[in-house]
Length: 152
Image 1 (tube, rainbow, N blue to C red):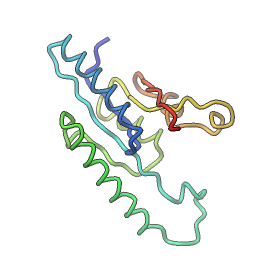
Image 2: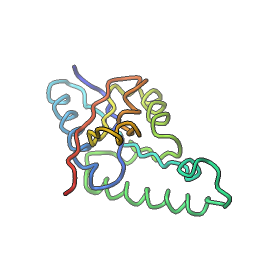
Image 3: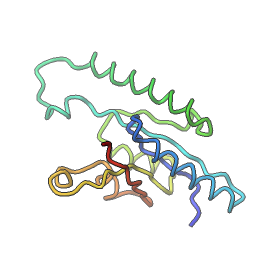
Image 4: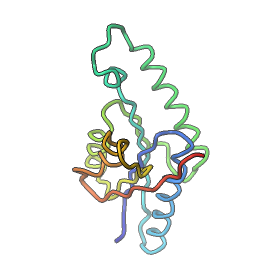
């Protein structure tokens, strides 16, 4: 199957490198086998801090939230320097819940493959959930979970 638009969900850590590399390899293979160029877009979701604390926080987190967003912008910029084939206009930095935002963006952008990293958790960690597992359920297109190696 040939893909035309890949949406790569990144966490902006070093661990996202294999995810981006896999997406770029798929895009190159598709472009080599097809006359069309496969577009690669990046997305990073900044979760509202109130969500992390269960929504019941007795203080204003807006300044911390803005710092988190600014740091994410800087890290995204480093990814563009590292992967010059990905266009800056093809990136999305969004506030919200990862599953919902990734699904919505995939629909809006007419993506036909979402690429995410997965730690392949088992047991309790699996029960607690993961972004990759969340994205898989209800996705508007194919989803590729790239297995990430555990850090020693």
